[in-house]
Length: 496
Ligand code: NAD
Image (tube, rainbow, N blue to C red; front, side, top):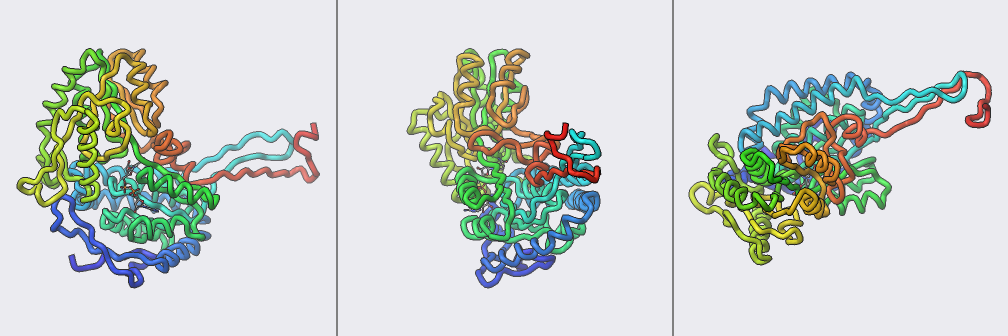
């Protein structure tokens, strides 16, 4: 690839000011460079923030339905590009092609859904306690948003943030993961083609600690929306808190599936395979723990091992591949290190556990689908986010024990239960302390029309996707208006 991938600032594609480039690498084949990308300097970020500030006044006064129409156009353009963009997701991030297409579909769905919000964005009108006076609340934009995104959904997550931010009347400076800058660039090109005015959406490339942190703490930013690891998110929460700056931080997970003794086991095994190994375990909602009723534990382990050993690992572009590579060398080492930790801590390695260095896999970052059995809830592999194809299976005595194990981590994104007993499903629904609970379905597969997010160290609760109670609450603030048309001084609570 000869052309350098540039920043997008104030409606122009511009190279960073003198700080060099970095490469985006195909994780399935390290020799395949997907793009050479400009690095942003402080001056580039200053320019992007200044452009977003300058564009804000006009954009916030643009009628919301007009803003929504631009999102509809973006949705149509992304739909036309779906195949090409889905293939790019696979090449740059590694997920199998069906999932790459799914990543893009999520962006399409979000753009249509938030386009519709342009004609809703409703507040409340309530009666005043005084005559000739009205009282209402309205949603208003927050201002200039810094959007910081991870690599695992390189099209969907940026769209999850850009669409609600824009429809609500905010302007944006977007810093994508430095592992997936090309997907981010193609997405921004589409928004440009859809008619987003100059300065409303800006893109700056670079790594987190320099570009991301400079942006998040920039004096010209009003609010931050971050998705990524707990370590980064909590660091940014600290910085933003000290600046009195709103931040939405959606962070890691240690999600679990409960399998009760009355469950449809075939279905539960399928769910555990999809949740544990889909996207190579690199979803924030990945089912990295399976908590199984002790009476069916051995049967479940045998069935799960059998199904996982049939998974085909390889380049995600091949239609027959079930599991692609992990994202990069650092993540590859981290996952293998966790496998060693699991063995040393006494968990039983049931399947996998090694890197794959044969054939085409030798060129990328591939790890065998790995299952640990006899995992104790307190072990590090049962507590910490591994973010790879590693599943820990644990035993539970009954539903209460299973729920206690699931709730016993400091994460709280997604959980699931397989049971045919409606009462147990109701208890799980009530007592599982996660932002999302699935009944007889795996931990992954959230739909964009409902809020998304988690509890405890995963975040402050569902703050993305959905409308009210989700993304609209993240990307707007409330203003309350009282209008007195009596022509005299009326005193609330006193004039009765
Ligand atoms: P990460 O925290 O390393 O990086 C996320 C983003 O933050 C990147 O753009 C990165 O460049 C930037 N960044 C890093 N350090 C920064 C700093 N000091 N200041 C500002 N920005 C900084 O996470 P990742 O490895 O890209 O993504 C994987 C993580 O994301 C996992 O923990 C996963 O669970 C989480 N995730 C969460 C959700 C959710 O909705 N809860 C969704 C997807 C992924």
